[in-house]
Length: 269
Image (cartoon, rainbow, N blue to C red; front, side, top):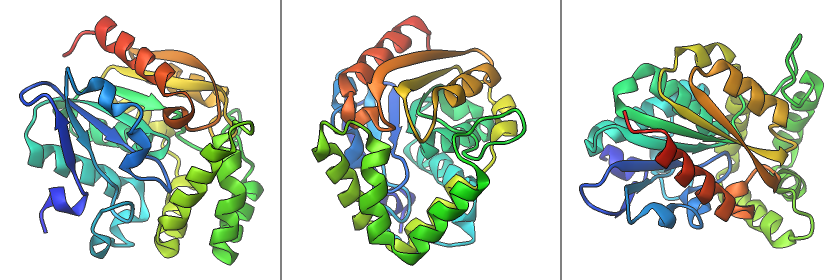
């Protein structure tokens, strides 16, 4: 199977225009960008894909060893960009895909024009002098609950991640997305995500970056967004007037506005 089929790559937008790649977060798939990506189709060759194990990807390609760290997912991004041959791309990564993009850009900077990191977190666990948002015990409990009852965990945690309690349909959509994911793969991806520590990798990135941070986010608090900004040379930080961890669903107009302004303000390399 080809790389593009493996990751269920879908192309739209303007042929010959600069590439813009959208990468989804944990428990999601490329449909999470449906309110954002179309806004860039007039000016970019838009690339959507699913991480292996999610959406319409080839589940048979899932290898627990390869995807036991975020490096395996970063390798996939590099392989997709190489296969497309569209030149340096604007990479938009949500949540864990923000760090996947960081790893890929550090590895192959010539493939990346600019980065847009939506709700990034290089480490979810609090550390000495660093606030990731969770204690080690809380992460352990989260992972144990997933192992014991994945569907129940999904129904509980998805509305918490989404925020916006006044719009329960958003939490329901995220719950349904989690429940469509193979539970065994989801549990492994969760461990890969929540136990990762990619703080040291930020220093290896030379690609200009925009950090988009919601003013309230229980998964990646504002302190985390500031940390990423402060440790990514030449990055910009924009605080969205939005709540929750998924502004691509809850506040897509703000995301589109911030990204459009950034691309106009920071020239292509």
